[in-house]
Image (cartoon, rainbow, N blue to C red):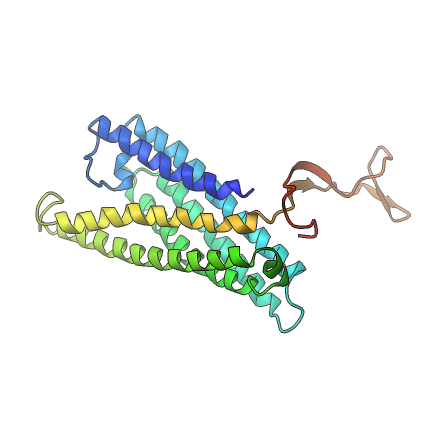
Length: 282
């Protein structure tokens, strides 16, 4: 499972550069820092961008879900016994999950709604993706600060989570600065262009480059943050998907199926194991 953040980061970033390269090679965009979205307005890069970034959005949501389950397990099984407000941290963890899913949904909007034909949903998706990711990063940094006090973290990964804490704070600061820079410069460029003050090739060139460069760096920073999940995901003993059947009737306290056979508690559909992980109670 610890490979999931690496896969997500490599997938999103590499395909952004692939579509950029295809667009430049076909003279569909200019080579010096275009907006990421404008590297995918023509065929064939349009279709490639849509399917690959939409897949990246699913990976992004999967990371948020696994991080949520990891923190949930720590809160319910390994929290300190004394003076711990469980409800507050459970709600904080849920808020993080919601923001992670919103960020993934925003990336899906960016992939599916092209900027040249459907600007409102595309821009809304970009704001959802980057804005929610920025807040999500700060929430995860706060949660990491708290779980570092848990005994299991002190015994199994104290140094790793200290480094994780530092990286998450640094990434959150950088992402916040880049988000504000991108939003302000994008607004100034669009307003100046609409007011006839120039174009990206002359008087508005500087603000345009600030906007595009900050967008590329923000994308890199947001996806790079996922790598801070690796120490936690390495602690997984096993990951599995289960289903439960509804009871047809109950006899003497035993749940049975319609054919009279006893029903087991769970049916395991998928299970992966990591032999170099913490005990199974996690």
